[in-house]
Image 1 (cartoon, rainbow, N blue to C red):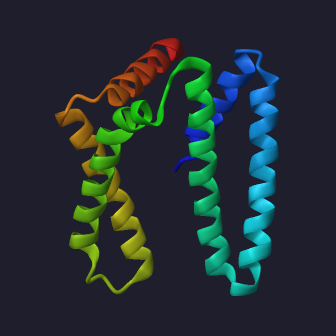
Image 2 (cartoon, rainbow, N blue to C red):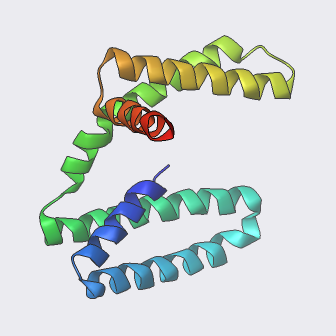
Image 3 (cartoon, rainbow, N blue to C red):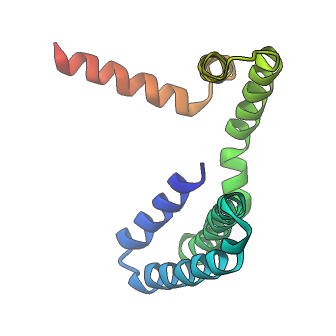
Length: 148
């Protein structure tokens, strides 16, 4: 979930020709990942999965802090930008969970969750006229015109 943001910040560092930022982030992230693996490996696969989430959150925070120094884009700006999308994602997931929690068949459960979550998220984005949905619709329209 956080990977796209980290990738965008890395591309920013490269585009701004600031290899010190990029190298510093990669070294810090590498050390952090090794430490998390060494510390949590003995506790099993669940602990490793949790360590990956911790790693991604810390990587994002490091990237945002350095981006703040480079272009003055702070954690506050990031939260303000992703807040509406995160809230709608949580609402969509909650609706999906409530509608499917009594389904016993795992395959049906997964498929219905995907359909309900995806559909409700897109509808909520459309209802609140969020920028991302407009960009996606524009991209699809552009692709459709290119095929003609």
